[in-house]
Length: 94
Image 1 (cartoon, helix red, strand yellow):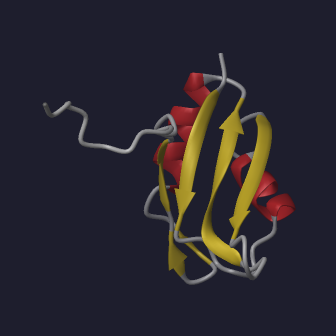
Image 2 (spheres, helix red, strand yellow):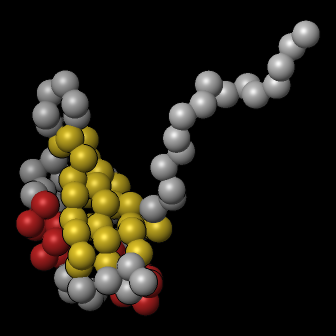
């Protein structure tokens, strides 16, 4: 079963291909995606990497979390499921 990792504090010059190559040091990369700003199209400094197995994902976290890449200390952890919808608050009033 694959695992999705959040990768933060990326250099704005890093490409998805470079991210894929970097994380392949820890195991099989299923996908690597850098998130861009909707208005400007510029990278936002974070992305997601999907690893083939949970074990490879854990290895990638231990290898890259806090590691200096292109002058920036990466933040790498398991991605949380995206929160969807809702207006918050919840309860009804009479």
